[in-house]
Length: 238
Image (cartoon, rainbow, N blue to C red; front, side):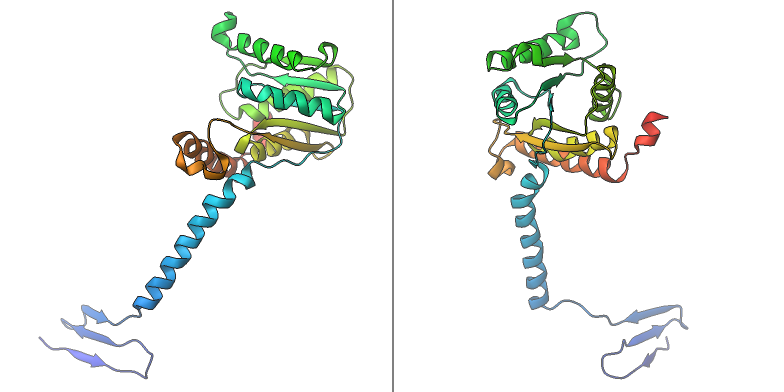
């Protein structure tokens, strides 16, 4: 077996050939232990940054001056006190509770009973009855937040209410995606504010320490990326 060695200047790749040029062996650059140590530090730093900052990024609160507060009614009953406090302190004229339900005549099986229950909690916590309304859109096969926002938009139009801005109250890391989907539904003429109410099922500062937090945050990362980069409002309206 004949072999030839091709040498080059310092720093260039050196190749060895055999089997009449059918096989070759090439020298290549690789990380030293210092390089591997630095790469590991970068990975660890990125992981720590993700754990520390991803929840605040998703659970954003950014209120805007508005007359209408929309509350996502699938939120846990424990958050309704927070929603009522937001309404009472925010100077809103109307509260809309959005509670998607199944197309089932039974109020318990459909989820309508739960919607009535959380509305009663809002009223008990001080929201005036004449300023609150519950909407029960039928659950869509996908993109439920977007379709709920469309139902809210239609209801406001039916009431003759012209709005230039609204606030949406939701739970924890769902907030950034809710604002994005409501903005897509209402269009650029309406400014969307968002309020992230705390989810008491886990500690948001250490969400990775509980299964609830891991499921919630990782699920919202995936869902937000879908909503930001793959979702198309024009396809939904087609």
